[in-house]
Length: 125
Image 1: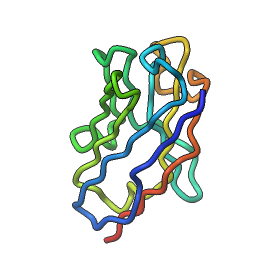
Image 2: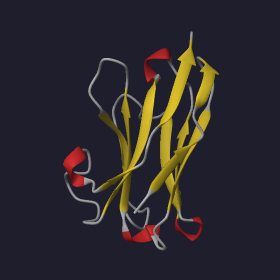
Image 3: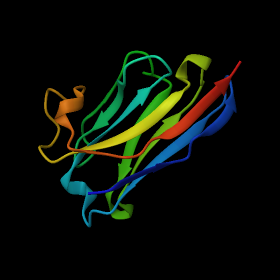
Image 4: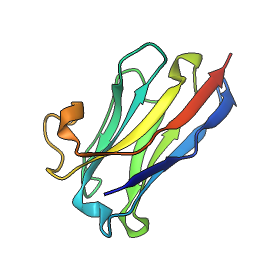
């Protein structure tokens, strides 16, 4: 399964961006999905996760209320809507897919089997 993340860019603080993650898999709905990010000099961290059908979602405390993960299985796409962006949101954002579905370990990187190449988000102050 190949994942392709897109939609990153340069935005001013307070602005918005929507990231998209598409897949070569014929049925992305078979996979639980998540977004992670890695800022310069920091470890990669969980941002948001969503179950196969989209009924369960979780967001990291640092982005809750500002970011929203969603999916459109008919379009084979997962989204991350980002609002009220802050300079500390600057990072490379990665989408990830899990064959095992959405478990209690949704925030753990080893729970995910496939990773996209990342898309850069830069928030200027």
